[in-house]
Image (cartoon, rainbow, N blue to C red; front, side, top):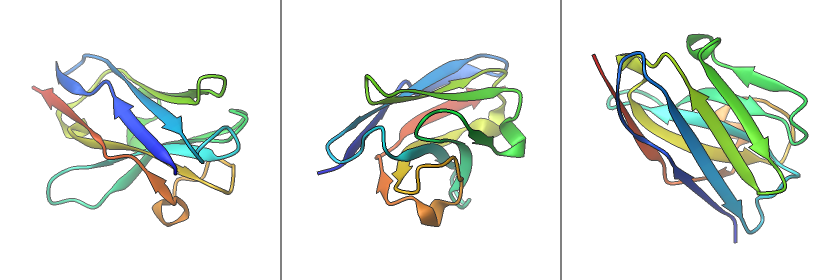
Length: 124
C-alpha cells in the first residue's frame, strides 16, 4: 500500500518561510518522480514543483520560481519543499504526490499517488 504523509504546514506572515516534508512509504519509493501541488478554496489544484527520481532535474511553476526549492532524500524516502518569501496568495492546502514516470513533470494527471495535504496560511 502506497502512503504519502505531509507535515510542516502552518501559519506565517508574508515574507516568512516554511519547510514542508512528505514521508513516503509502501510502494512509493525512490524509483518514482515526485512533486508538490496546492489548492486554494474555489481554485483548481495546481502544480508547484516536481523532482526526478535521481534529483537531477526539477520543475517549478512560474509563480514560485526563485522562492521555493524542492528536494528529496531517497535514503529517508522523504520529499521536501522549502518555501521562502511567502505571499498571501501562497495560502492553500499543499499536497505531496508521486508518479511512475520518474522525471520532474508537473501535470497532475500523471500522478497516481497522493497525500492528504497540509494547510499553509500566509497572512499579510
